[in-house]
Image (cartoon, rainbow, N blue to C red; front, side, top):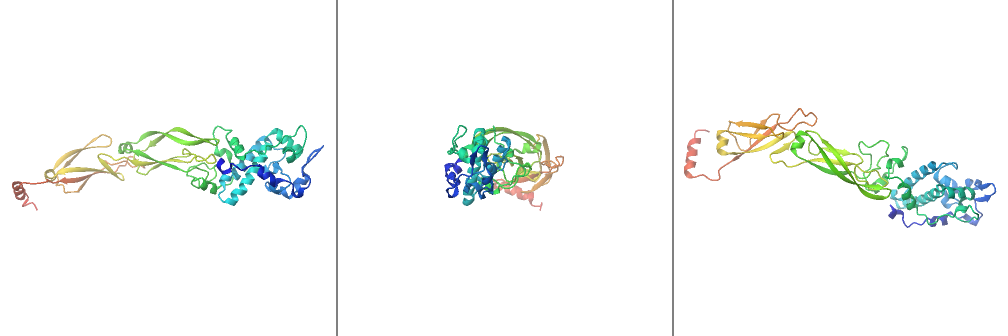
Length: 382
């Protein structure tokens, strides 16, 4: 953040704020206080930021608050304007330069009005009194070296953790260009709070969730420790959290589980992104999943393929499934065992099938005598 606005001296904009034409100060000290009538009629105060080229700056107008504004009113006004005009949120060079000037003026106004002593001097003598051009015991000299970035950082680090939703009101307009500049995905993520403006999120982070077929068959709970980036003011730190995933029986490869706002926070100006776990199935020693069906490959010697055999398949819930084959088994043929496959994620009582895929193993060699016997045995079978 500081890299974008650091090095810009506030004193550079004071040169733009001197009196035009070298005339007398608009802000005049008198026994009755600060006379602002001329200042308020001046062209320089037609907008909160017109004071950049005017004779004197109306800090109340800059923040858009009345002169009887409370401390909370002033803080709230600064919060909204500083977030709106922070240079990091403006990509175009011309817009960025204008935003820098506005951001510095907003910072200058808040620096004065948030300090009771400076505010008192400003109310009595105006900008000239703040900058030390007036004399008197009550005059407080303006800090021309005040860094807008330091002021911003100090303001938002006053809380233990930067709360993005606390910075914006419901009616605050979105800043999609800023979001893209920060590398975040635009638009509101599904399930995000309606109170947050669109696009105010860090980038979504996706993690593979490796699950065994047993876990997907039976369902389970997975507890995972995640470490994500967070900000305390402008200082980033690693934050650990334990998340629990309730794995439902029958979940498919590619199923996603989203933890909204539990991903990394790429900037103190953005909400944390979402953390998405995507199911990935571990390779299994016995089964391959096809939809809700389970494929089991059975290797059968040629003699058994011709004469019949019996074998046992151990299921994913540790049952023994006895399978008897009396018919001749041909290479790559299949046999279906109903309802012994994976449960349906929508209706776990419904299950796919267990499909036995046979691979017939032929002998590598035969003696002449055995070949003769086989020919005699098989001669009349076709």
